[in-house]
Length: 519
Image (cartoon, rainbow, N blue to C red; front, side, top):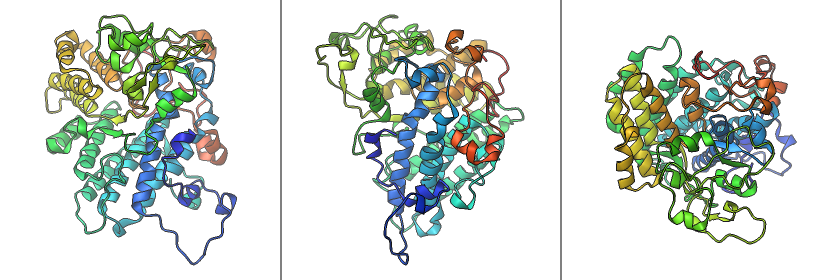
């Protein structure tokens, strides 16, 4: 875990230790009054949970999935370069599974839920929504995971994994419960600024919960046996104002609200200069459409301070690296991640000496980290209308997804209008419509953790570039479909050891039923 970011986590509690399934004697050596109960108030636990979620969504979890779906590429011969070649060891996911999620973020949400009627129901609704979001990430990454027996600490150190297809309906039920709690009133103290995401605005949490349900339904629709009438009825019976209504409803971690004011993607770049760069898959896709978001996503290449003032507007001027081709080297003539990911440029002074050109730029580092946006909501609605006959016009939702992505990023309105007037602004029908939709969603969801990889696993789009066979000879050119179970957990739990994967292409998650296209 990045040491700087750890400072914003205001609560590192005894609770977190207990969820690991180890005794207090092994971790704490303090004098406490055994007759005095330690109570962690919900406001501190919520702050801790959301901070840990923000870190997890921008740290290794972000890098794994963004590399796999070729939004970024890796170089410099270190750990990320191995991941870029689909070499991810079970020991490397220990922290994501246990420290960040089960014993961190998810344990905190469960601790709030356990408080029940003793706290304001908004805390319960928020925590149930966050818990559903967290478990949706976990099951999308690994498939079968502990759910019904999870988060019980030392009561059950070897929880059984539930089938992913059983977890999904349970998460939808949990979100329904959350919405009921969020609609309740109470004289008890409600969340406000301790909620980093929506500042205690329960209507926005309701909108997010319903939009998350749509995302889950979209995944489920890919699996056999799904009945489209389920989601058709859900959309028809849910008021439009109970879904996301604008960019202000984006589910994101705002780093200008926390003490350190730097997001983990930026912190990694600062600490590991040139380990990651832009992928040619994403850059070339956007170059081909002269996408105006390039000037916010990437630095021009070749770079000069003047190029920031007059960024390229044609179909060239930005350069990415083909995934799996770095070979331990560093290419200084590539585009780097820019203001949409790293915050405003605070200095363009380039130091003398061997410092890499773009590495000389200084950024504020406080850009928000998106996790589910209003733009994504519109693309979900477009795909549901296109493929499953739900209410609304697929074309209108598609264009709205592009428009709100552009405004979220900061593209001038005139540039957005010009882009929508090109062929990119028309979805159309037929065999190419889904590819076009997913490609635009892929660009709009740049560095949103997990979901772009989910979309590729569901649809086969965008078309990814196979890595060279020499980068990973044993992989036979296959793309990652799921993560390995953590070594730490398979050593401790025979039930997880029995379902360990031998490689990243083995046993896709239950809704990843695609048997054609890229494998």
